[in-house]
Image 1 (tube, rainbow, N blue to C red):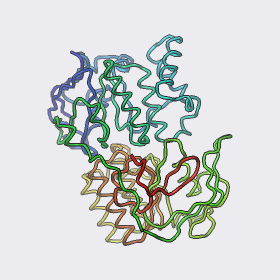
Image 2: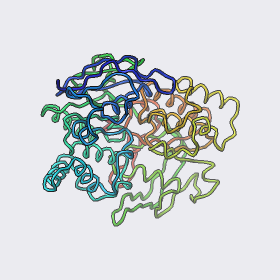
Image 3: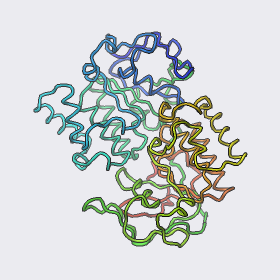
Image 4: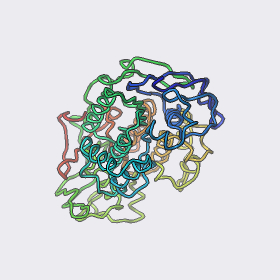
Length: 456
């Protein structure tokens, strides 16, 4: 039998029944979209199917008619390839090319076949500019593309993708969707977990929703957001200058990554967009003095320099949330190095309760799902009494309900506390009608966008 069969799967995790006698047949040669709230168990289920979770669950998982746990690890890799939600967990080697070689050597391919497959996947995914780059220098979106490339190069008949597009720009997302559709047509089975449902209507065969420990089938039309361009600027909104760039440049080796002659950000909520690898995350790091640059950066007309005073005024929420953590539990993280008022304590508890993670407060942060880690990070960052907060991909791994909650909190802080935000994201819908300004990073420089074009 081709495909994935879940038979009476039951799993208890952290004193919670995550899967309750789950039964489902996922047919082969189909592209299936898996939806569900953050923390519902989508990533856990995918890891179980891939064979990364040992037999601490009840029931059986069959892949193409055979029990997955009875296979050797190399055999599992040949049959099921998985792209993790956090691509940093995927890589072992220093460069993209070495990572591809390592993965293909692990399934015992001949050197000539390894060379052929690498060249094929590089051509298909346009990876030439990234092939010899060190992985730790890649942007989040570039890492996701490379992680997908490694799994596709292995050539497993079943491909599992856990939030594979969360940091990928719209054009690359569309290209990858077309590629996945072609692979499905060529006989692969593809299971994708995603919170953003746009673009699937042309390629999806089945939609499964994981909720309450059960899988139910639904129609893609019930999940799709309205096909509209998010409005990321507010016409007529004017505010004072907050941050300035004067003859600023950032280089990587001999390549100029950014060259901003004269540009100013204004107070309020600003959305910053740009293609993968254009330098958005690098720019944010430079703004908080964690990346070398030439030229001047001004905050309220004063030249920036690394200091305690600077970090008491502005901070950066990084893309990979676990890199932000300095403690072991969510409770410690949200109270670290900050005096909390009673109102703020109440707000934090409200957030944990609303987001359904109150029972995680004393657990290890590193046992949380990627979406739950992002929630803890955002609660901690939004609790800081800062004038200016920079957020890099804050909606990655979050369901629509969680996105709405945090966007409402951001809006409240902007209105009441007069706090300003610079938000880098490829997931634009949450900021529709909320963002005051839309700034685009392209051709190494910054410009305001107020025409509503190209935001999808």
